[in-house]
Image 1 (cartoon, rainbow, N blue to C red):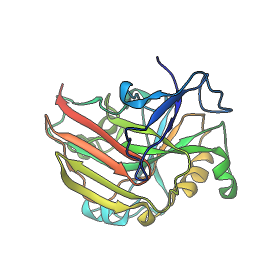
Image 2: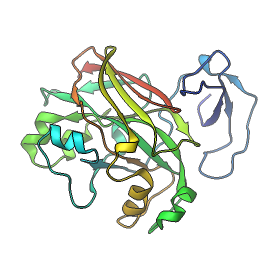
Image 3: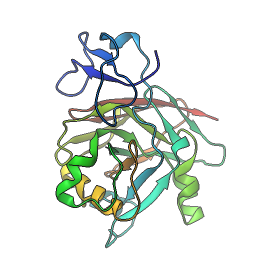
Image 4: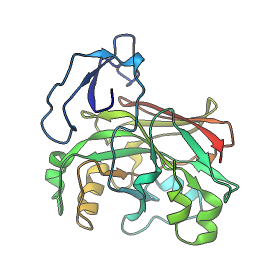
Length: 252
């Protein structure tokens, strides 16, 4: 089986349980949902990235404490950059550490998944164009980010945008706990309530720059505590009500 579906029966924190099921749907989820088969146990399936975006638009310096930890000021307007669609991987997939970098770091983020074609969306109508939210890791080659002076290479390697485990369609993006662990050690622990520019504000702002397509992803920024993910380490991003995204880092 390869395709989209509806996940039911997760716990209140977004974790799967013995009762969690996957119901396949016809086509994609960016429109009406048509059930295409009976529910099956989620435990017997491999989850892929929950969306195949044409582009990933990411926000820099959108938590004050993160901007400060890297010695940066908060920009007067949202600072956006692009990650290629080829950087997207799913839960359980490997983060490949490239030979060109000596310091690859994790950046736990809330991701917004766009549900319909849109442009110049008024803030009040943003909920109409959002399918839901998922966990993201904006993996970054920090040394290359500093040496290059622009972020395309540092943020754009294959596997540098893990997404998952699924899209939560009913989350409140303005009040979610976000935690990142590396080999079980808590590195980042914050809340989306501390976002300088909130998720819906970012959707409206970005849509006034570029057309957004169904499945596109907006990464809302990372809180303080970013750090290295060494070869062989396991990094997890957990967001309340959504779930946990886990990936292992391996050398190229």
